[in-house]
Amino acid sequence: MLGAKDAKHYGLSVAILTGDLQHGWSVSLLAELTNKYGLSPQLSLRLIEELNTYVTCNLLSGELLDIQYSKLPVESLREEDILSMLWKKTAVLYEFAGRAGAMIGLEVSEPHHPLVQALSLFASRCGLAFQLQDDILGIVGDEEKLGKSVGSDIREGKKTTIVYYAFKKATAEQRRYLRGILGNKRATEGRVREVADLLVELGAVERTRSLAERYVADAIEHLQKIPDSRYKQLLATWAEYIVCREF
Image (tube, rainbow, N blue to C red; front, side, top):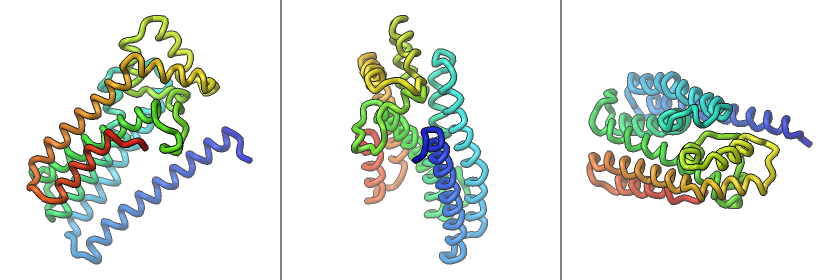
């Protein structure tokens, strides 16, 4: 039987191993496009280089900032700090997927091609919306559908936009109460639920939901630059699903 500390280290090791495997698989797929399907070697190498440097560095930076921010008082952070962290830990990968897919489909090596830029920005905005919805589900989601504990973000002291907005609106007494529970790994289920209810009561969850919806609306605006097709419609449907998903 694993202890809590061992389980945490085991979970982290599995996450790192999974990330390494996915990264290696991505590089292998890009190389295979050249070897088997005739993709330009220059384009394949360009995308592999971007994945190994730009994407990986941003992902690591985002995860590190997520941990660092959980140890800081929320008053020391700005909204743009939190959004930048979310972009680095999630949206940068979406952006790369959109850009790489467009460059491969169009067989162009120019990242500033109008259609490549449009799909990059579309995917990036969707990535931010996805992470914001993930934070919402971490507070008000259904544990059975999510497959994970609701409230874990509260115990870990995650500095989400939900927490940021709540502190902006909370009274001095409510702030003191929130500080006593956020980041407290021993907080009872009852206390965690009280904090979750307070975050909802202060309008922080709804404000974050509105922000996610604005990112999706912005994403779909960028998608309008793409010629009409069945695939364009599927992308629009996927973007709208991001902010209404329950798991």
